[in-house]
Length: 283
Image 1 (tube, rainbow, N blue to C red):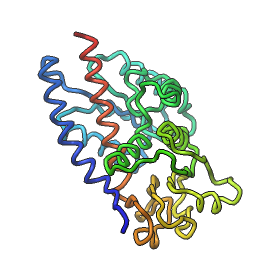
Image 2 (image 1 turned 180 degrees about the horizontal axis):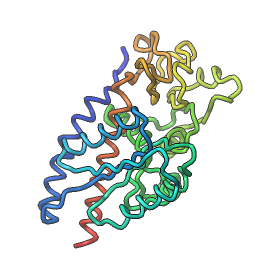
Image 3 (image 1 turned 90 degrees about the vertical axis):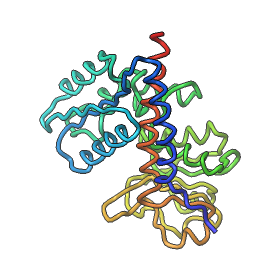
Image 4 (image 1 turned 30 degrees about the vertical axis):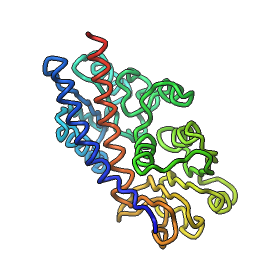
């Protein structure tokens, strides 16, 4: 019988703890509310929905959010200017630039302009490097959320063979490094990997992070594997074909309701941590 890795339920439990931490912080800092600032460039409806969900999650735990909307015509300099204003604002504790931005905007340059102390989405090169070395840093929110989900269900990855399919700098690559830092033996694959099926068949942990619906076939996955699907596509599809997995795998995330809620929960938790650190530094 598979363990159903219910990210929605775990995120709800985390919100109770976060609410208590917010109240404790406000008692220490004179009532200042932790703030997450989001920047949305363009009018992509999915991105707008994600930004709204993050703002709602902030409010549920007693935090606040600032939503900055820039037009599709915004330039890299426009985005950099918005980030610099937020970097300089002591009332803002976390900054999120919603991915993806329009193609004409230099996303990496914009990500790397976010102050490391406010990089609560774990997107800067500096933060990535610290995380890779096992040093204190805010991890990229989705893989960090996956690690929190595994920890909640007491799934020990140490010594297990893990395959991560996808090499995005904010998902696949940090996921592979987080698993390796937790002592898993990790193979990082992608859409160009030769004989991907064979790589996946060897895995005790499979993470789908390739961004293509049902790209990983269910019959490639071995019995008893731990299956983490980080994809979400129209129609409720993930990156992994779900047929029969709950009947024969050790643990499976649903789509939706598995990884997505943990991403938002992690973003909020890391924003609160940033606010707690700022308060300690000021005292």
